[in-house]
Length: 213
View 1 (cartoon, rainbow, N blue to C red):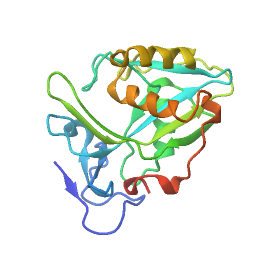
View 2 (cartoon, rainbow, N blue to C red):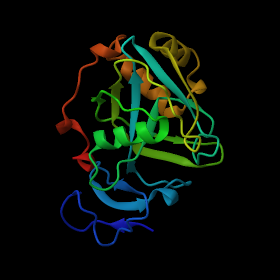
View 3 (cartoon, rainbow, N blue to C red):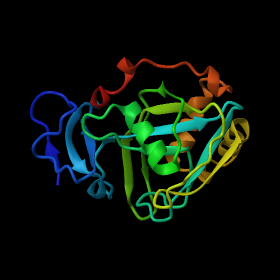
């Protein structure tokens, strides 16, 4: 089922057509504007429509990065090593709030800061079985002042570990297929911002795709 938007922009209140018991993703047009919604459970297949997502890279005060492995029950790239967390903002949900929600849901972590670093990232990728990802996917840096006990959600995360960022970057550059396809592309793009994650410039929310504003 796809719910098409007819007027206005995505706002905080749900439209009457949306079932509050269903998790929806925001569908995007060719200019990355919101054009409708679809249940998350139905959106990933061989002809996945372009939709809004996000990726988050979590660091502690020592500059270590939290790498995660996707749960083996995931629809896309099960069991694969990837960035700290990913997700989909719901209709009308600010992306940074969605990042905070998913950090808590997936890892049991409350970040001290969540900042936009790659506002316009967009990618496509196809699994061997034909399942396709097709996302407008802003990238965020999140930080915690000190490592905190993790509570990985087994439905979302198979494992998670703190690692030195430079080591992770080197591993991904040597073997891009050792991580999810979006993570490999994002690590390359983040590398262009510089080797120090804390020196990456923060981008304003006005640079987010139209579907996220």
